[in-house]
Image (tube, rainbow, N blue to C red):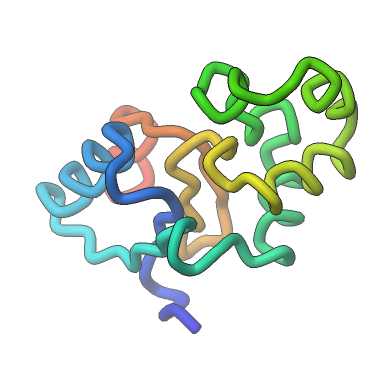
Length: 121
């Protein structure tokens, strides 16, 4: 279990946005735990929290390669939080990255230097 005083960054190490986010955190002296979707999977309880906090339409990355490679009927089947959760559990590369669980309990999806600057002071 990660230290609750340390943010946890969820993503895929070769994702350019995740690389930028990890570099930004390091440059700002923020020691974050990295959780690799590819190797460690997506904890279902965390995915449920992300969907509740940010909304399934934010967490689901419809711009990414994984989404575009789905068959039309698979895409059409995603119409609510439950169907999105089922897809994202099966295909974590379809999650918008990075997802960060901050020490204060906040959850952010995507990389925003402006927002993150406010969070880390």
